[in-house]
Image (cartoon, rainbow, N blue to C red):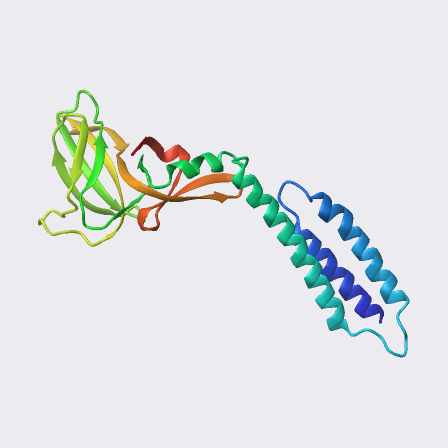
Amino acid sequence: MVESLNASMAAAQTARQSSKPGTGGSAFASGDFETFLKMLTTQIKNQDPLNPMEGTEFAVQLATFSGVEQQVQTNQLLQQLLNGGTNGLGELSGWIGRDVRTTAPVWFDQSPLTMTVDPAVNADTVTLVTLDARGAEVSRESIGAGAGEIDWQGRDAAGNLLPAGLYQFRIESAKDGEVIDVAKAGVYTRVTGAELVGTTPRLILAGGGTAELEDVTALRE
């Protein structure tokens, strides 16, 4: 019986710790959970010794209580999202369906991607370097030295269309054959959702890509 009590109390403590949010327990967790533990202990002490409660019944009670506590906390978080009170995530809902310019990897569906090129002012040669989602170089091509928007057609050095996937880009500026600047190129892509990673909001992009807000440099219809 002592082993059953110890196991039940240990499980209860584990459930309590796992159900606490990162910023501290809610009133529900810190108040009602203590009451539940006292009731459980009293129940164990006063049970019929000739007909003791099975350990599985304790586990069911713990699981039920932990589930209710988790649901309460989930409802609180959802309400915060609806009110736009969780680190601006509510405001980001207005970005869904719009295009952002980001330096994060974006999905290429074999249709042209619009990107912004801003090489070093005194560069005489500018190279667009294409990288895959892991950062491995896929292709490089020489482009004009001017700044502005261009449409990337997604072709390799042989003119073959690259496979669909996530790609990112950088601009290498050179003068007299020497690289003088390397910068990420921002590409426009569609926002399909927003999520929280810990307490930090993050955009979900078309094709399954994601972008931190710090990687976004423009927003448009």
